[in-house]
Image (cartoon, rainbow, N blue to C red):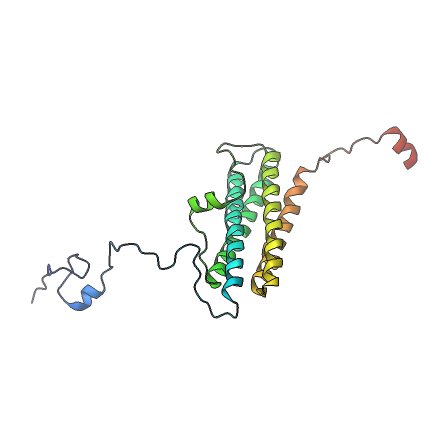
Length: 220
């Protein structure tokens, strides 16, 4: 029986292949490639979607700011999901995680829209940290009312920016960006605000507050 010997010839990437055939070398991963940007941050490439570069660039810039803030809000929800405490732990633990997942969906939609416009979407954590306008929370654990206050402030910041960007996009004829911002970003954030804000309404959980004497008399 003929024995098959493993060859020691080097492949195209400098590694030893199993044999000297061209097929084996072509199947090897090409390692240690030098990084090279094919499109720098802030640069626009032409995309044949019927919008001029000025309109696409304006939308991409506005969306990148909203993207940075949305990524931060998503991470803020995850932080609070892990660190929430108190008698509403179970409800908020689940709610915060649900909202984080919904924000993650928005992150993907916004980033893809930026790329579709011919721009470059912000992506890495250090770039997001530099760009976001949402204040950085402490590393440690905070009380639930403080957590919710942070979330509501972040939502409001994003909602104001989204409405302004949507209006500008519409004026520039970029109805795709307008639709994304209004139908997805604004509506998702508004609904989340409602669900979260109700947790800081000071209302009794078991026994209602007694009415003042005057109000009780009027009720009778």
